[in-house]
Structure formats: structure tokens, C-alpha cells
Image (tube, rainbow, N blue to C red; front, top):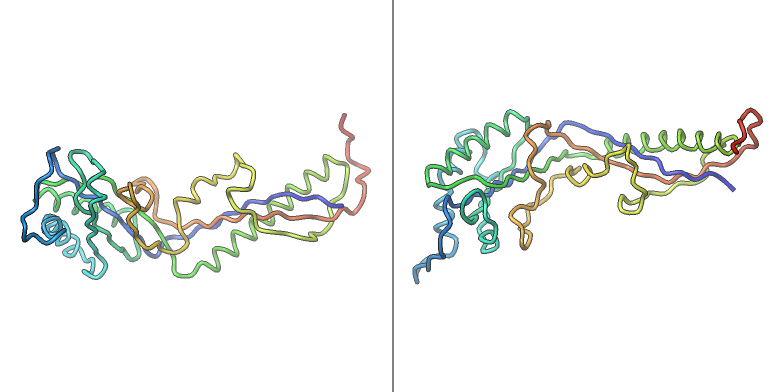
Length: 239
């Protein structure tokens, strides 16, 4: 016999790296243009985003940290104007909100040189070592479980004992807690995600939020079972 509760914990730290996925779109709608028989697939699209890439390199981004993704899937996404033609993926070290905004502004200007638009922007943040964040989140989750168990024991007229068991609770299984924002957990990553083109989507990272600072958040949910020491004679019986 015991009291089992779910505790929630969170730990955050400034991001050490950021990944940006910049979707570049045509300005106007238009019918498909048949490629030249000798055309290299993707070559024209890569040339079109050349000024954008050059602007990022001029701002201090290493060429190895920039990659251009070209795929027919991107044509299915229509941005502010016409369909997407390419996605420019950028890795940024020691990111700040000001630095990211600077790079995106340069990307907009670079795209405009080829009469293109920057549409959707995805962003993901990471740190090299998640161990400390994971431990901090778990400690917070266990402390939260103790508080919840104390309240549950008080309501039952019992006294909480020591923890006698615990287990991780996946976010999809735990009951939703309105005081703990689980929705943000899908928007942050403890380690940088490898950009992958998702079928039917333009970017594979969450949309960039220009109002928030780049940080990594780790969430923990643990189910903890506490022993019952005995009856709390001071507790007020409930009707």
C-alpha cells in the first residue's frame, strides 16, 4: 500500500547551437516550366539562392555550416507568393536572438536579389551535453512529486513515508497538467536535430519564435510511489 503520484520537472539553459531552416519561395504563382533537356536537377534552384548563401557567409557563417536542400516536395508548399524552390539550412554557434534576426534579415535581402521571398523559417536549439540538464529536470520532478504526495496524504488523513519506487512517464501517457506546459517540449531539443525533409512539409523544425531567447529545455515526468507511515491524527476528515 502506498501513494503514487506523477511529478513534473523542467530545466533550461542557453543554447550552444542553433539550426535554421529557411524556405525560399518564388514571388508569384506560375505554371510549371519544363526543364532544359541538358539541365542538372536542382542546379537552377541552387543558383537562385546563391546571393542568400553569400550574404550568410559574409556575416561570418562558415560554408560548411550551410547546406541547400532542393526537392520536388518543396514545390508543394506555397509561401507568401509562389511555391518553395529551395531550403537553406544553417548552423549557428552561440546563437542569440539578435544574431538570428541579423542572419534572417540578410537572408531576406539576399533572396530579394533574385526576386525571391523568405517564407517559413524553422529553428531548433541544442547543447553538447544534456546530462546536467536531465539531472536537474529529474530532481525538480521528484521534488514536485513529494509536494503532490504530501497533499494527497493530507487529504487522506495519512502521513507520507519515503519513496519506495519510481518510473519514467512518457509525455503522451501522463495526464495533462495545466500548470506544466508540456506543449513546449516538442519545440526544444536537448541535442541538435539532423535536418531531414519531411514528405508533405517544408521544414522539419518548429517555426522560429522571434520573441523568445534561444534556449534548450529538458522536461521530466516521473511516477513516484511513497510508503505510508501511518494515520495523520491532525488531519481534518473530509465529508
